[in-house]
Image 1 (tube, rainbow, N blue to C red):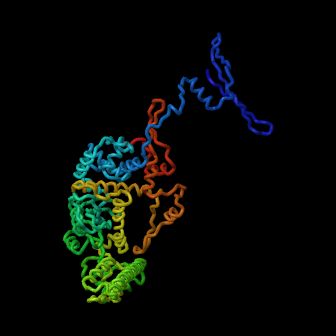
Image 2: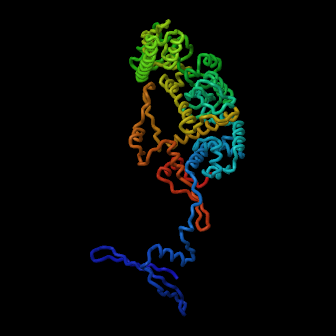
Image 3: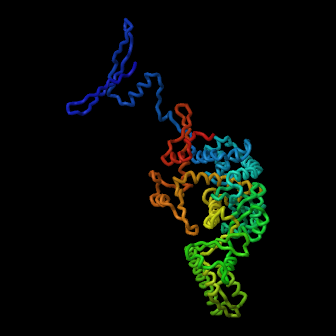
Length: 576
């Protein structure tokens, strides 16, 4: 038996098209002479299209079941975020970069991917794997990993650290090129970490022990190396490690180090002078700038009559270039901040003076203690003079001192040992300003994307391995952010201006994205972390249909489809 579609189409007198619906259930056979014949068994034209389609399947031998009880979704697991990170890691050959193939490498690689898409503690990450709440664990074959396995993988990864950093340096640092370096810190949970110590907290966590770590990047901000130090290590001491690593471990004899004024100090520069081929780009501290401007020195305001920067020389800096810059916007900002702090200090000092005047506070030592707290709070004590006697306290602004500082508002001086052939004066300024790339990486590691804080490990090696995982995740995140820039608020085409001192401007395209909150092709614009969250809604479904188990990925949304287009890859059903 079969179903014939005998429907007919005709045109009426008025030109309209008409269809006569006709579906016939027929049986075919051969007569006595062997000729094919057919007989109509029923007219089924009144049945719905779904019923007719079902009858066709039955006549072909198919078995039909009720869809609702036979169709079950056994599991739905977030997949798109780890798939995107895995694809990018594959492009970067990150897994092979970690070391030779082994179970420890698989777990270490999974830790890097997990830190990239879901930055949590190691215990939370292992539970995430064991619960099957991600496709990462089963696809990489580490679903049964325990915390002991994770610690073993971290110990293994630490042994590969030198080789990994050398590979990154070969990719992103070149002989005669530029290396950026800076130091940051993160506080420690617990009291047993051997590296934990009190020091200058860049997290504003006073009274908390911390560890410090120095990050080396290329000029664009790609991390290439990280070192961990006790929490009371000074910036210059950490920089000695960076110098040794770049020249000894990476074999770069001719390289320019870029660091801030607290990092590359006079002592470190004296050491760099002894190294053939070593250059530097840093900035002068305020007293050194004042010395250049005093007594008719080379730094005069007339330098900035026509432009905001000028290059000078000085015998105190032999063989070096000094690029003087004046940022009017910075000058206004510093003047406003200074006035705010001066006013706040005066208000607090006035309270002390009132207490002294009323006789409630008489002892000079107690007066001095309260004054010291105020001065330490606002840190503008150098702009005040005061007298303290028994039952007497007076103070006033040091207007001469304030005027001297205000004269240099907005002025900074870049100190560099780099040839003019390598970098012009504007380029020297831009090189120093590129330190923001390292600061952005610290923000990525500590706050925005990887949540490295607080440090929960006790052994120095585990702390160092943890920070190495964070650095590798930051390296992966750097490339993911760059790839997904069209879908995020990231400016893809920052305008290049002739004035390196001027504040950076947003491109027209970025401004339009900021305003309209959508891309040129009408897709919504996301923050990077929100985009990863949206990718995670692209799930892998385990479907059981009448006993047959199938794995399917949900149909991507337009944003998800665009994200994988940017990765130049289809959505994989499994991580391979």
